[in-house]
Image 1 (tube, helix red, strand yellow):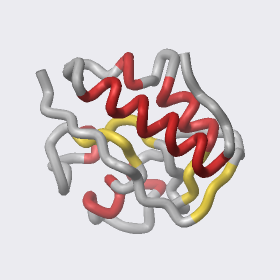
Image 2 (image 1 turned 90 degrees about the horizontal axis):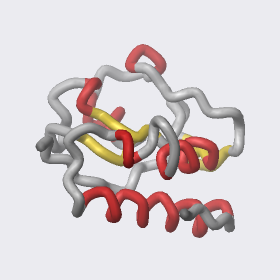
Image 3 (image 1 turned 180 degrees about the vertical axis):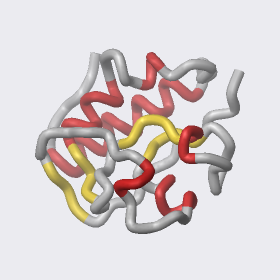
Length: 112
């Protein structure tokens, strides 16, 4: 099992724009610690060892928390449930973070 640990992402604003997960070359920096702030789960701790270690992006490359990204991370083919090797304790923690962010930043309930 991979040692994922969920954390609150960093973001400077919010958006409800269509969501397209950021790729490594979308960022204006090569600093993986800074890039990791856009994701909920790093596989290799902080800073991550590689971009591929980052799972569940929820903020776009411009630093805006995206409601559509939160919904994608919460349920479906690209959600916390689909992350390979995540332990049973980290799944609910990540889902709770997603739900809290949606509630606090968008006044929206996301849940099963």
